[in-house]
Length: 439
Ligand SMILES: Nc1nc2c(ncn2[C@@H]2O[C@H](COP(=O)(O)OP(=O)(O)OP(=O)(O)O)[C@@H](O)[C@H]2O)c(=O)[nH]1
Ligand SMILES: [Mg+2]
Image (cartoon, rainbow, N blue to C red):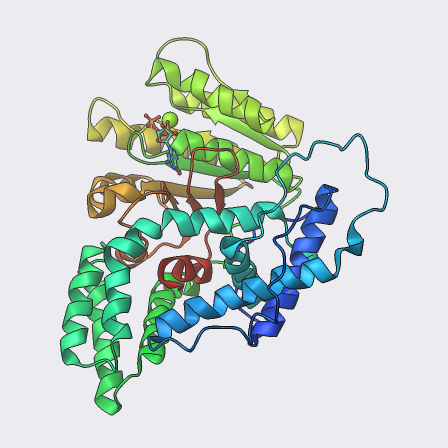
């Protein structure tokens, strides 16, 4: 099978920790991506006159400023090294130039940041794709609002000097403002207090400690759940996608279908949201975009469980490996919604006895704690196994991810950050925390 896009990154191997390593890694990744695209070499900006590290300005006092300056100097070094190794460009200009599916990678600070995140997860530059680089940049941009509105202040507190009790109190307020939730905030503060009781925490270590604690919270559910949510190849997997109306269920189904076909799975969609007339049309459009068939029932007020029944039959006869079930987010009342979901679930359990079933709750990050409360009904009715967090682009409530894992005890399986087909990736606590806290 080709690359499996359902597998999340895990922070296992030690990161290359010298700037030179990162630059070399980013350079190889950049060249590899360009080769994949077969695009002519873009004109990099001219190298600085002397090696960038040497001409760096006098060290700024704040470690945050130092870290930012360090990445800038790495970027300059990366650009310079690419200029000196340009023979990769063919002598004869390739005419006509094939139009690349995606534009050539921009060699900027965002590229380097993404490269560092991938390198730190033990990835090899030769296996990195432009899509991953773009995704990480998107995630980082998406979380920028949270970072700016709250966590930048946090870094300011931590960056001022050794962490003391006063700073810890400010930190507590900030975590609550980011929708991290009371339980997680209390736990994080307790851990930090325990540390500073032993010794004053210098800023670098304080930030590292905080990042580690946030990651720990996000990783907790994996003690009881498999690290990856990957469809088992060669057999039927059924993913029931539930959630309040408008959170992004149908869009997510389109994106998951895309991940599935890209990873080589045979995929099918069941249009079991029969409550809204336009819902079936909408999911069909997504099916077309992803190149995946949709099973639906054209009659008004069709029974969703009957649609699922038909879809399972079709999936079994066509050897489908992943059946994605779109469901309604709103019915006349809560009881109807619960009853309908339970009926769909019964049909799945009866008709597809050997299937691996996942029940995934979609949550809209922009709704923060409110979204979590609204979703309560699904936790009661749908026998949930995981969460998909959408709309992480442009929310100041990115901290909700921590409250979700705490409150529901479920792993976040995927995150969505945009309305496009490619704007969904498996959740990685490392990438998430780095995008949230990274300098
Ligand atoms: N910015 C952004 N918008 C998103 C994302 N995911 C979904 N949306 C948008 O959210 C809106 C609702 O998405 P749907 O997929 O229709 O939501 P749904 O849960 O299926 O809604 P119902 O079928 O009414 O229950 C649409 O305008 C989507 O384009 C995301 O990750 N980012
Ligand atoms: Mg929908």
